[in-house]
Image (cartoon, rainbow, N blue to C red; front, side, top):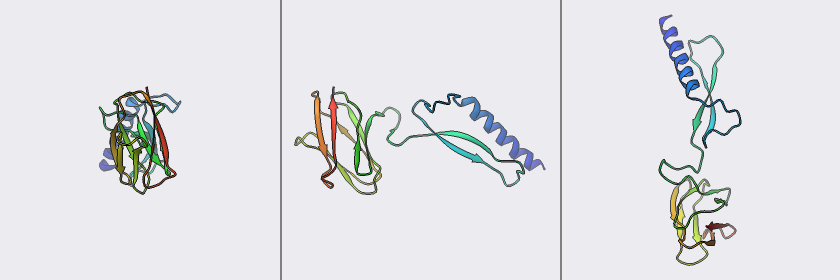
Length: 148
């Protein structure tokens, strides 16, 4: 019985802690953090499980201090930011199961190979303009970076 009470007390404390730290905004915007539902149960519990939300890092986000804007490769397509700053370092995340590249159509600007599931950084050109790029492995893949 003491063990059940200890587990129940720990779960209640965890729920109060998470509730106190949570945002009650139901719009789905949680400061860029996606919400993942989690059910907490214990073999000793006889009541219904308690459901709570935990923040999770969305794909394409990088570590603190790094730019959260970047290029995401998924489904053999590039997803790019609306615009980037001259000389900005961009994270490129390959969410596909095959290797891709991010290769500038203008020779020598940037060219990186990205293994499946990997992330690399590229530095965009210092001059404002529109820069097209492609995947050297998959000729149908094209993207555009707008430097402002």
